[in-house]
Length: 306
Image (tube, rainbow, N blue to C red):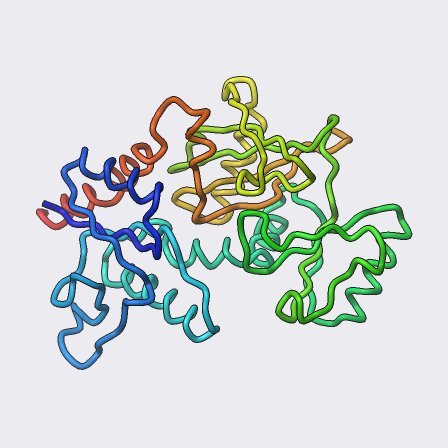
C-alpha cells in the first residue's frame, strides 16, 4: 500500500480528518514533524533526506500541515527538506515554494499585486522612521493602517493603527513593519469571505462575521454558509490568487470594500478548515486527499509502471 507522511507537530482534528480520508483511498498515513527530518549525504543519494519511519526509503507522498517556527537557520532547513523531497520526485502538497510564497506576507502581497490582483495597499520596511512617516501621511489622509507579523496566522498579532502613537516598536514585530491599509467591509458589522480552493477549483466558502474587525474563527468569528453559485466573482478572484501563487490548495480571505471593490486580504498555504467544515456538507479533508491522490500519487504510480 502507498504510504504518505503528514508533516505536522500536532495532528489534532485536522490530522484525524486527513487520516480518515486517506484510509478511504487505501493509503497508509504516518505523522512526522519537520523538526525531526534531516539530510544524510554520506550514503545513498536516493535516501539522502531522512524522515521518521523512512530511514532507508522515501514516502510515496508528503502532505504539509505545518512548518514549525524557529531560528532563521531552522526554518530554512525545514523548507530545504520540502524542496529536496520534490527534487527527489516525491509529491509535496503544498510544496516548499508555495509555502514560502504564502507564509511570508510580504511576498504574498508582492506576487498578488504583480499579477494585477486587487489587494490592499501594502508597505513593508525595516526603518522605524520610514514607518512613522508613512503612518503620518496615511492618518492625515483619514486612513487607518493594520500592522501584522510578517510570519503569522489566525489573526494573532494584528493591530490597527488609527493614530501615530499606535505604531508599535520595531522590536515588537521582529524588526519588520508590514503595514497594510485597513479595508472597511461593504456593510454594517465586520465580515469577509474565506474561500477554499483545491486544484484550481473553489470547493467551499463561508462568510466570517467577527466580534471585532479581526474576523478569524480562532478569534471568535462566527461562520455562515455561502451558496457558491451566488458569488462567482468572489470564487473567481480566489482562484486567480491561487494560480498566481502556484498553490495546490489554499484558504483565500477576501473582502468587499465600501466602494464595492473586491480585494484579496490573505492567502493561507496551510489553512485550517474546522470552521468552514461546520457549514460545508462535503468533507473538505476528503476533497483534499482525492485531489492529492488523483493528481500526484496515481500519476506517479502510472509513470513508475511505464
